[in-house]
Amino acid sequence: MSAQLEADVRTISPEMPAMFDGMKLAAVATVLYVIVRSLNLKCPTAAPDITCQDTPLNRYLLKSCPILTKEYIPPLLWGKSGHLQTALYGKMGRVKSPKPCGLRKYLPMPDGATATFDLFEPQGVHSTGDDITMVICPGIGNHSEKHYIRTFVDYSQKQGYRCAVLNHLGALPNIELTSPRMFTYGCTWEFSAMVGYIIRTFPQTQLIVVGFSLGGNIACKYLGENLANQERVLCCVSVCQGYSALRAQETFLQWGQCRRLYNFLMADNMKKIILSHRASLFGMSSSNMEAADLSRLYTATSLMQIDDNIMRKFHGHNSLKEYYEKESCVHYIHNISVPLLLMNSSDDPLVHQSLLTIPRTLAEKKQNVIFTLTLHGGHLGFFEGAVLFPQPLSWMDKVIVSYANAICQWEKHRPQCQ
Image (cartoon, rainbow, N blue to C red; front, side, top):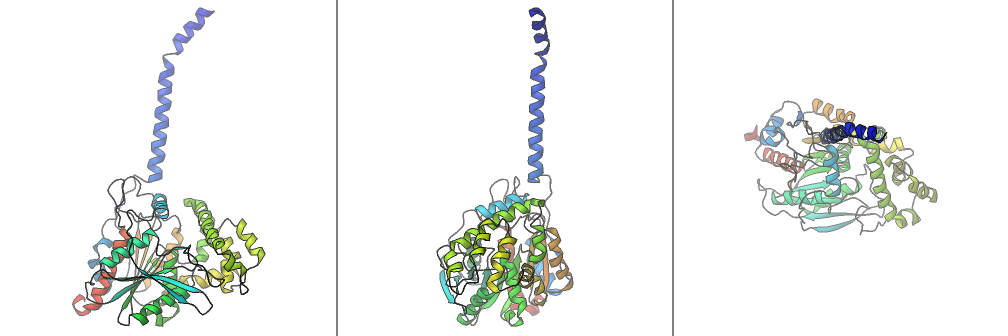
C-alpha cells in the first residue's frame, strides 16, 4: 500500500509546479488586464473636439490659440483615467502649488450676509497694455486657498491680469456666517457684489469672467440673467460645469462611472460645511431651518437630499424641482452675447454625456460660443506630463489664459485681426 502511494506521489509531483505556475501567470495576466482597462492605457490621445460657427472671430481665436487644436497629452500611466485625474485634483489640487499674495475683501450684503473675495494684483504689464481683471468663481465649496485656484491665479498674474477670486459663502473654515444663508448652486448675489466692487474700484478695467464647475454655472447665470452684467466684460470661460441641475440629479443616482459614490462623497463634504456653521444656519431667529431639517441632514446620503432639506430653503424655493430650475444657467446662457468658451471632458465622472448636448447645441446656434470637448481630463484635472509625474501647470490653465490673451488682442486690434 505504501509503495503504491509513493508511486502516486512521484507521478503527481512533477505536474503540480507547472499547474501553480500556470495559475500565477493567469492571475498576473488578469491583474494586468484590469490595470490596462481601468487606466485606459490603450485609449489614444487626441486633439479636443471643437464645435463652433465659422466666423472671423472664431477663426482668429482658433489660430491664435493653437493649444485648442493640438493634441492634449495627459501623463502616460494614469492620465487617461478620468477617475484618477478627478481624484488627484480633489486630493492634491495641483503639484507644487504657488502661494500668491492677495488682500481679502469683505462686502456686506443686504440680507446681513458678508461676502468675501481675495484680490491679487498683476505681477507685470499685460501684453495689450490695458487694465484687465479676471473675476473668478471656484467650484462647489471652494475658495481662493484651493491649490488649483492658487496655481491659476499665479499664472494669470504673471501674464498681467489682476485676479479677484470669490470665496463661496460658508466655504472658508475661519470665516463665520453673519446670516442664516450660505452658497447655493446658482445664487449670483456674492459674485455680483464682487464684480460691482471691481468696477467701482478700477473704473478703467475690463473683465474676463472665469468659472470652474459649479462656479461656471454661477458665472454664466450671472451674465445671462441681466444684460447689464455683460458691460465691461470681454469674454467668459466656463470649465467642467453641468449646465442643468435638474437633468444632472438623475445621473447622480446612477452607478455608471461611480457617480453614486461621487454623489455620496460630495454630500458628505457638504454636510461638514453646513454643520460647521450650524449655530448660524439653525440658531438665528431669521433662519428658515427647523430642528427636523437638522435631523434629516445627518441622515442624508446624497446631494439631492441635502438640496431638498436645506439648500432650497435659503431662497424660499417651494420644491427641489423649482430650486434646480431657477438656479441652473441652462435657462440664461443663451442670453450671453460676449465671446463664451465652454470646456468639458468626455471622461468627467461627474458630468454625464447627456448633459453635453446643451453646450454643443448652443455652440451650433450662437456665433459667440466655442465648445471644447477633450477626450481626457476628468473633472478639473487636465494634468499634463510625460509618464508618471504631472507638471505644476495644467492644460486647463494654459487654455484659459491663451483664450483670454487672444480675446484681448482682438479687442485691442480688431481691424488688423479681421
